[in-house]
Image 1: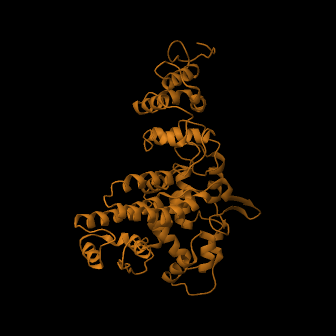
Image 2: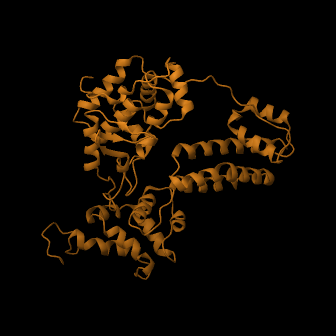
Image 3: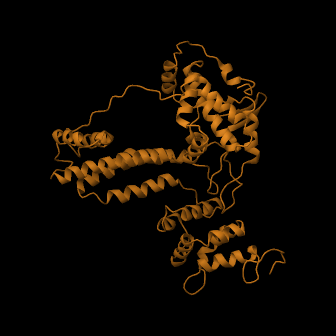
Length: 416
């Protein structure tokens, strides 16, 4: 024992705090048993965490393989270096987040970076060279340029990345289908496209076909847009169903505060999990009117007791990551990686476990609010587009120019 601490010894007569640096250093050491100097930032970032958690984490084979991989490389640790070491595994994601949160690595949009890696892995399998060139140009100039611009302001969402993957996959299916029939993108005709549509659900590739034709990678081919009736989505069968769910979240103190607040934001203010996940302490405003939440361009007045739950969340929020400093963050809903919020998928799963389907709950809230609020006000308060707000208002039968702002200023929700 080196530090004089009285506790259960870890090994070689050392407590966990004293044993942790040596254990991590040995895993980062090369074949000669010496850790290269470029890995000192990694060591410092890891040993700043709870020693017990670090020692437990380093016992897993995936983590040992990851640290051993870093030991065999040269130069400082970068995002690109971690990308070569199983970037999609949880240990790599966690180590990356630890290094970013400690300032050893610059922040990076991980959804965008993962999407770019996936795109490259898919493009290389396309046999048609000209088709591959066209598809690469399409995805770079039509999708990645837009996403990279957006990523400067805030990270892209998993749904955005999923949409690009789906469209690219359909475009690759089209190119493979043409290749199998001795055709290419430049030689195919509308007859070929129609034949493919009759065999495949190819409407998702419509933008690629349109882009290829307009940029002269193809000639006079198109995929017609699907005409779908404007629908606002499924709602709860009765008005009371929504309020019963809200009442449970308001009064059941056995539930987690994070679950209660997230569920109430969906049920009362129609906020989607994607936006809830990105809420920070800066979105919570303390004014003469009380506690407000800014999710659109105008703040929402939070009724009791939701305002108390929001303040509690601000004051008592704790990071859930086991490795890395997790409490110095702005997020209302801190996640399992240090310095990062909960993912929308995790929030969705938590709400569903409580019997709260996020999409139906949000639709029901929008329908109720749209019946009383003018579309422009609904857009400003909830952060949705004016077009979407107008559609909901029409569906709710609200044709009046006025609005009932008192819906957002109910003083007491305990009666529900």
